[in-house]
Image 1 (cartoon, rainbow, N blue to C red):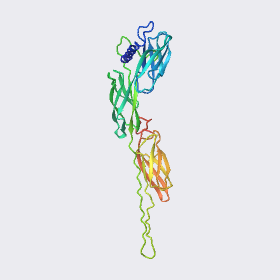
Image 2 (image 1 turned 120 degrees about the vertical axis):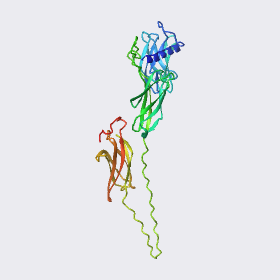
Image 3 (image 1 turned 120 degrees about the horizontal axis):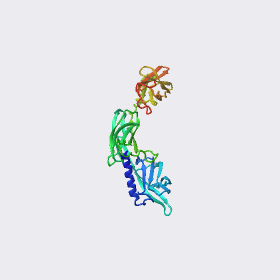
Image 4 (image 1 turned 60 degrees about the horizontal axis):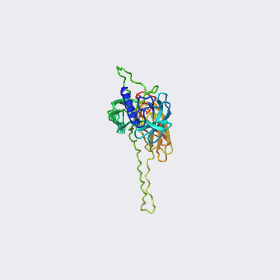
Length: 373
């Protein structure tokens, strides 16, 4: 906590030094006007923060503007002691540090610049930014810039706490962070400054609030690491069959050579996405079925029992079909088979394919042996 107070105090002194060219101490004040802001840095997105001003003229109108754009983030009237607290203000999105300018309304001159405060930009980035599903678990190298010096920053992956580092004077941080086995898609990675532990022995208790009734806001930044799934198995391409041309005989009566009779009984095939998340759908593709006839698709567990979430489709003129087969949320994880059956005039046609069901994005940490079938 003392280190955090030191960060804020150092900022107050810097603001006071900058303000010395803008204004003089208010009547009865013993120090120059100052402006404090929290969090001390943002990740560049619009952020909720708080402002604290002091050593100002009592009962005067004030406003806080963003330098450059002139956007107003706070306004009001100072207290009888020459201070103010502006809670839950919106710090705008920016590509760099944000400079806040505190102004007081003076009758003789209008709005007068009184103090400034710079809110830095603290960021993180992961290298590599994407990993293959088969590589998990694995580590990525995370770097950051603009973090308050001597403060502890902790990393977290999808809400699970990871390693922590202490920011050096340059504000640049770095650490290897482990990405566990996860479904395909983006995995959120966050860094946040921690509240320092209280001292064991202290003559003067450090403050526990930014201002009376206003808790501290600690800087944070986030990025994502994308888990990439393997490409689905391509559908086999049919090879056209060439029918031989009839040949005339040398006899007076022309007798065409009979066309070979093709086997009209097709050999069906079935493919399905190799990996399906619980609560998601698997894309099934069939070929070699009887045209214009219904194909029934059902899930079968390793025990031989059927699982809910099947589907049906009608084969097109070439005997092909594409269908989506639902896997219910919190379904049993692990391998399962998709069976396609069609009752045709020539008899029953059937084919099967295997997939692997993994936990969905809203079901982290599920036991592979538990879940609804």
